[in-house]
Image (cartoon, rainbow, N blue to C red; front, side, top):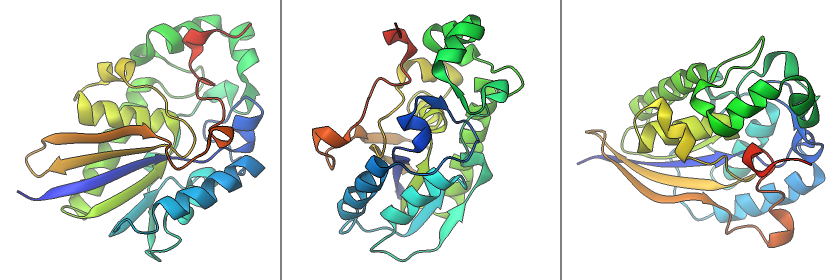
Length: 222
């Protein structure tokens, strides 16, 4: 049976991540740590066979896709469906503002993510629908191939939920991954999914992993 090997890769640390900013669809470039992460990510994929590379068009994801593609020189296919969640009025604002001005939204994020909705932006169901569409596009265009996908924490959380659990409620069981983390799946033509690894950061030394709980609101923030 034909299987597609799917690598889902979260973007490197951006300036927004560095400064605890809710980026959403706001363009923020790569941080100095992010550049170091990308160099090691490129080396990780140097000897991994790839047939196709997909990316969110946002710069932090596209630079991550380009790093994965360093030794492969494949065309990178950008999909709007791979963009991060639109956080509406909180675009470019601090996580602290989310707590102070929108505590009900913060509570949904921490405790009921399937029903999260950002004022003036997207709800989680919107992102799940986009993740499903992106998956369908990728699996249709690159069936049976080795595929790398560079995207964002919330989008990839939804994509992993779709692959592993088949519905939106799965987002409660999938953590947002660390910067440049790699998840790997085999997806058979009949829809059967085999998880190989989830949120793997073995290519990074401890000093370059960053804060892995940055957007885990259950941890609390002072």
